[in-house]
Length: 185
Image 1: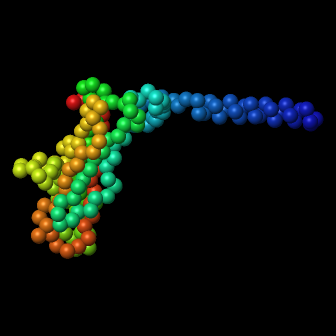
Image 2: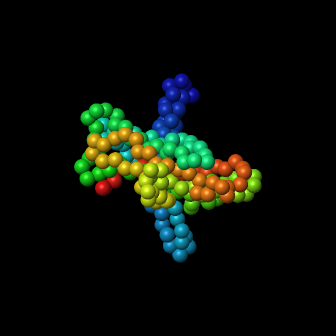
């Protein structure tokens, strides 16, 4: 076979292979379900692109990565900052921070930390202020901080062990998971 013949053959084979590959990946067949094949799977691909410039306002919420519980209450700050001086929270909206879940491995349903070596739990409380005569206590699902309009800055809450005197010696760990959202007031 001549060089030209080989090139044409390779070209035809390449074109056929490319067409076959394109056909194989171009579209899935819609699944057919009948008595002989009662189940089928189908995967749909979704795409969406949104430019950062389309999002107004642009702000950041800061929540401490780690908080150390002590004998006394500990400050628990939540901060909101705008990216520039012209940002604002839209009218009728607020930025909200809520406790989504809390606890320790295997138990994310209560405000508690766990000592895995001694198998003991210590509950804690999150509340608005040490100065309040009747403090507001926060639980899972509660909003602990929110901002509206051009309001920004830090909102401080307090956290402390519920019964420090009766907590046994040990190394306790746990987590608090939050949701941060822009929502209606």
